[in-house]
Image (cartoon, rainbow, N blue to C red):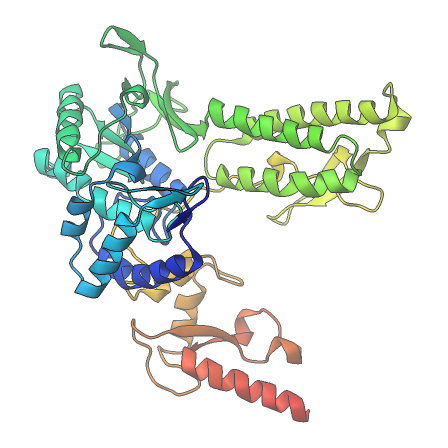
Length: 464
C-alpha cells in the first residue's frame, strides 16, 4: 500500500475494500448498537444530538464526555479480526490491508495496529472494534422498569455517558477504560471530563461548568421560570424548572468565522461574483448542519460579523466608504426562502446581475426526526426509508399514500409489493412528454417494471 503523507490506499485497494465492505456491512448493521451513529448509512451527527436531547430533556444529569485517543491508529488487529466471522478469502484480504504497511518517501513502515488511513473500509472496521460499549454499560446498570439508569451515545470515537447518578458515571468510566484495553485503545485524559447538564460541579479539585460540547454542538440546561420550563412527561407530569438548549458551540462558531475571514481575505482583489460563489456553499453547508437546533441567535450574529467584514472589503477596494460607493456592492432586494416565504433585505451583498450572498438566517430551523434505534437501510423497510430520506414531491408520507392508493400492487405487473422488493417511483406521463411532479401523476413500480416502462417510453418518443 502506497502512502503519500497521510497514507491513502491505491485505487485497486479502494475498489476491493468497497466490495468487501458491501459484503460485511449488511450483517453488521443488523448487529450494531442502536445508539451508535458515526459512519453508518442513514445515520448522522444530528441523530446523535437528537438522542442526547431525548435522554436529558426531562431531568438533570451527570455526563461523561470522552474521546478515544488515536482510535484509528491503535486498534488491535487480532482483536478486530476475532470479531469478524466471514469466508476465509475475505478475512485474508482484511488481514493483508491491516498488515500492509505504508511507504512514505521511499521508507517502508510496518503497521502493527490501526486501520488503513483513508481506506474505504476503515470506518466500518472501527465501528466493529468498538461495538459492545453500550451493551457493557447497560449490562452493568439495566433499566428499572421504565426508568433508565444510564445511556451511552457514540459517534465514531467520541461518546457520552449520561446518568442521574455520579457514582454510575464514575463506574462506567472505569469499566469502559478496562473494556478498551484488549481493543488496544484508551480514553484520552485531556479530552475527557465529567460535568453536569444544569449546575457547575467541583470534580477532582476543579470547577466544571455546566454543559458540554459534542460534535460541534453545545448542550446545556438553563434555569427558567414556570412559563418556559420543561416537563417530566407522563401521567404525573410536573415542571422541572429548567430548559434544555442545544446550540452551535463557541469553538465551532469561531472556526466558521475564521474560514469566512480567510476566504474574504483571499478574494481581496477578486470580482464580487467570485467571492459570492465561493462563500455561498460554505455558509449554506454550515447553516444546514446546525438547522435543527437553537441557532437563530447564532445565525444573526454571524450575518452581522460577515456584513462587517464585507464592508471592510468594499472599503479596501474603493477607499473611504460612502453610501454611493457601498451601493455598488450592497443592494435592496426581496429573496424567496426555501420554505416559500419572501424576505426583504436592505443591505444585501449582491452583484448588478442579481447574484447575492446567502445569509445564515435564511436557513429555517426545523427539528430533526430521530432515526429509530433498530432501523437500518438493509432491513427491507423501504417505506420508512423512502419517507425518511425526504423524497416526497407533495407529502412526507408519499410512499405510504401511493401504497394505499394502489392497494399494495404494482400498477405495471399487478403483483403485490413485498418488503424485499426494489421499487421505483415513476411518472405516469413522463416529464419528457409534459408530465408534472404531481401526486396524481406518480405511481409505485417494481424496479424491473420501471426499467421496462422507461424503455417503452423512450421507444415511443422515437416514433412520436
